[in-house]
Image: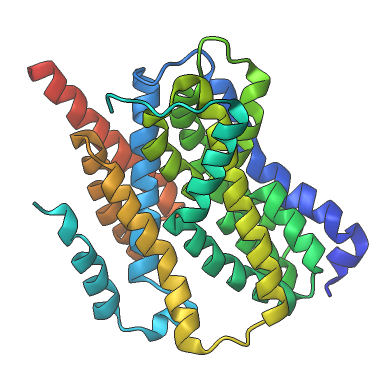
Length: 90
Length: 242
């Protein structure tokens, strides 16, 4: 194990380096969403930003795979994704 | 969504949420993700209890992955915290878009604390799909049940992965890893019923890999801002011309 972990303790690192930097965005979201209803423009814009960001994550995971998934050819990965869209095309 | 599902009590709504979680494809995804996470945690040398606590406290697979792999390589803690907080920016628009769906007339701020903490990709996608059909007074309980179902699955399979530790055949490991993007992809597509959501999805699918390919810093953040902003702009222009 690494010096930093020994020095600070793994649970302190979990809170300072994992929990707090992650949770802060949820809390900012909570404070921002106060008093907004689901039709308000900021909520609609937030939904499109979150959707586009998530779509970016998905496309990157499929196209630029790492680890064991990279051993499956890219044409198979993209082909599987495109085939899976069939039920939605009517 | 003309008829809404009502539950006899908040407890029944909670367990309705747990059931929805366990029957959804995302449970399968979380199994795959957290078996991998458990194996990684084992390799890095943290305890299985630490992994379980990080799943409950952080509840975001990308942030956990960054933190655990950085503990393994021994990177500077400040850089790890920065990488975690950048990966977590996506949680902000998700919370803003989700909470108004949950809030009823008598909802207090403290009722929102748990759903806020529970917000993550799988829970967000399923909540946006399922909540409109749930009676407003039971949405928070349902959402908490849904989240606890997912979190319980993740913690359980984190332990499983920890003790199986990389004994998986490579092809099975590859298939487990493919579950994550495919299930996110299909559920986001089926959620995008309105033109504005479809546009955001399409822009994100194109921009994400392009910006990454061009080596743009913070590529995912820009994908969200540019893709989401464009979809919103098109929606405003269409509304104005109708």
